[in-house]
Amino acid sequence: MTTTSPTLGPVVVTGAAGFIGSHLTDALLALGIEVVAIDRRSVHTDPVAARNLAGALTKPRLRVHQVDLVSDEIDALVAGAATVFHLAAVPGVRDSWSERFPDYAASNVVATQRLLAACERAQVGRLMLASSSSVYGQASGPSRESDPTYPMSPYGATKLAAEHLCMAHAARPDTTTSVVTLRYFTVYGPRQRSDMAISRVLAAVLSGSPVPLYGDGQQSREFTYVDDIVAATLAAATVSEDIDAEIVNVGGGSSVSMLELIALVGQITGRKIPLAVEAPRAGDVEATRADLTVAHSLLGYAPRVELREGVARQLDWMVKQPSGHSVSAAAKVVVSR
Ligand SMILES: NC(=O)c1ccc[n+]([C@@H]2O[C@H](COP(=O)([O-])OP(=O)(O)OC[C@H]3O[C@@H](n4cnc5c(N)ncnc54)[C@H](O)[C@@H]3O)[C@@H](O)[C@H]2O)c1
Image 1 (tube, rainbow, N blue to C red):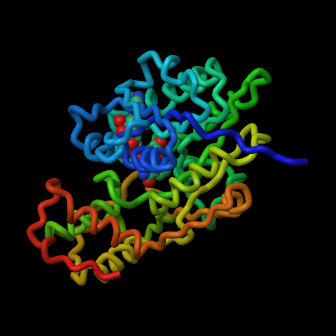
Image 2 (cartoon, rainbow, N blue to C red):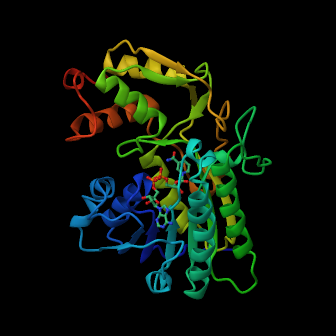
């Protein structure tokens, strides 16, 4: 039996002004694809959104819409799209314990349901959901897609709810929208959110302040370079038409502890890094590690960028930012690869 691949464009990217969404948007535009970019942050008033989409905004095939997926009309934006990449969400484990939780619930769950319904009305061919390794919870070895899910944070619970909504829609007998859920494992690279570990470590090194370390530093993460995430996400959009619903881990291929990460940053920058030890944070699992068998067999995916190279690229990018990092010592940082 021959399988055909669905057409990629035109596409909608939600969360396009964010870290990963902006890289995906850049990659789609580079392929000559028309992109309808949706985000509730405005490129006119939000400096991070403006910075993230600065390159994309120079391209004629981009249309940017400031839209809140929780409450705004979205049918007209989805109409005509062959593919929807759904990356919009409120991310981050720590804040999800706070009074901001209603925003997580609305933007991660309600918005996903509204978007799926709009996709069905518009007969969109495929939706990619950006999900997270945080749906797994504590794991003793590499997590497989078939493993039980036990999110350890309200954030993880909302991401799992979004996954279930996708599966429910994909199981409808009348749907035309297939779904690929991508479980991203900690993503890093240029434009990484400032609340994330590698950003925080690099920012501390650049400003000469101690690096905050939560707990004993033995907690390990599978870090995935953003270009690898984009490659897997694009591959998921065009893989066989016979798919109704798939779940795929996307990881960087190895897992390192926070102490190992900090030591690596020390080697790359040639600096001794002082630590500020703080209490462990609720919801932080001890280890994340991806089994990439499905990503390899279904998407032909293999991570290409190793942690040392990826961190060096992120540091290069941070040093070049006009503001946002107090670079007292940074001007002298020599990046060693
Ligand atoms: N960064 C990671 O390591 C990581 C890991 C696993 C999964 N993910 C998932 O990948 C996606 C992108 O993450 P990111 O790190 O780029 O985050 P980000 O915060 O940089 O980007 C998310 C974007 O979504 C937008 N958004 C949020 N709520 C919205 C709403 N109601 N309507 C419209 N836009 C809305 C935000 O304004 C933001 O620009 C998220 O779904 C996140 O859960 C990220």
